Length: 332
Picture 1 (cartoon, one colour):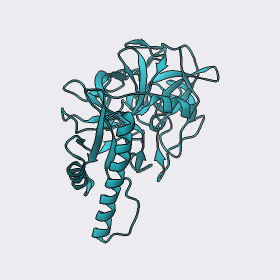
Picture 2 (picture 1 turned 60 degrees about the horizontal axis):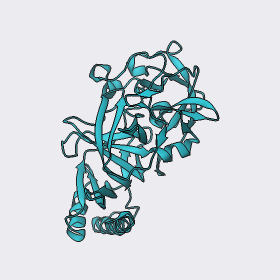
Picture 3 (picture 1 turned 30 degrees about the horizontal axis):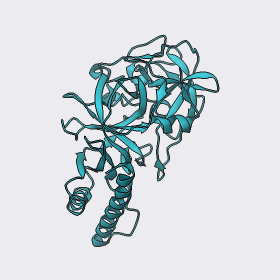
Picture 4 (picture 1 turned 90 degrees about the vertical axis):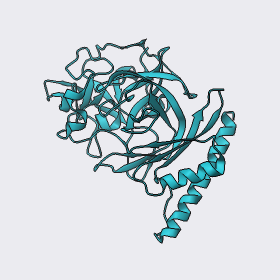
């Protein structure tokens, strides 16, 4: 199928999934409610011939998800790309619960880095640690890009809060390791469907190192699927992968006690190219880019199982959507 045909089929499959889920709700005797957030994500899967199939992702821990996936394959046919994932999560938000992003397990940069550069540990003063993804320009000012759950942390975060490099889980202390303050962000709220997990840090010092491992990343593109990509993150360092799905809707992500389970639409999925995962907790906020140095997305979540090699799948926000939401441009 071409892109438009695949999108139409995706709409039809989504309706069928919702019908199956609604039947399940009625059969259980539970009160009627939304069928979204049920652990079934539907998107487009790139094919070797340049066309698209349907991507169907079902999460462990959702009772009806596997049953629904099987029925969709039976109805639509074997061309559906079905993958099981573990729970999709972001890193912990509390500054003193940093086991998931433990420094001893990290191969990326967890120490103090001046000038600031992509891939290093960074976080809100009350968050564990995430990754500085890239530098952007807002109203002529250079600022640092990462995730909402890295630079804001949750509903209590406020513009002007202190940002540390390295993050608190990596030994960052206020005021010695302060590099700026929380700037613009896109709020995440319970019950709302999100598209980005993104925030900016207003820097105290705009002297920064702009280079990624491929050099400067100054352009952004819409992903078509199948691209070979890379990222440099605080936990797993430099890794490579492949885009395995685009335009995924209803991706359920666990944000812990602060926000609970949130639903995301229009997301990109990446699978690690080697024997290990493309990302782990603490890599949140990494910029994902192609080998030619063009940005494709902002990494924000992942599972610890699933994918062809069993080490998990990574989810990223389309970079164009992120930049538009923040009113920002990549620094050239």
